[in-house]
Amino acid sequence: MERIIVTFIVFLFIYLLYAITVIHNKNKMKNFEKSGQASFIIKKYKLSVSKINMKNFARLIAFTNSLIIAFTFFITDFIENYILKLLVGFVILVPTILLCYHLIGIFYKKKEGK
Image (cartoon, rainbow, N blue to C red; front, side, top):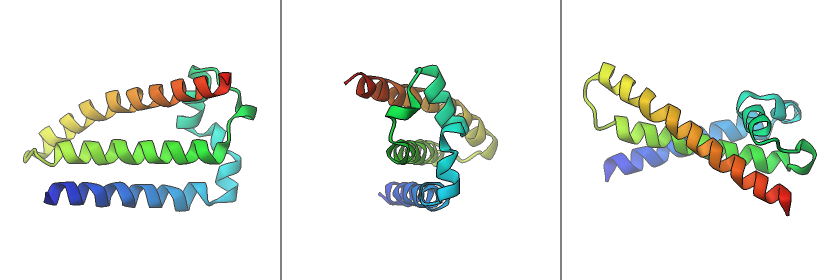
């Protein structure tokens, strides 16, 4: 139970940090579509930037990134060896990022078609 609470705190911390530094910062929101994660999703799924509400897109990416980091933290928290923890974290992190970004891309592609 303690690990779940700590994981939830990690999730909230990452999301709030992202919200404060990116979503509520007008200068960074202007160029958000050029950020690495947004441009990856936009280019890979050929999304129209004009049809995307960038603030909601940024919130969804922030939520997803926070969830990915919290999930990776939760899984690696069971491992005692730090080197093994780092390796397992990397192995979990990369496929999880690709899967979640794929789901976001599919969601926005379907939303764009409506």
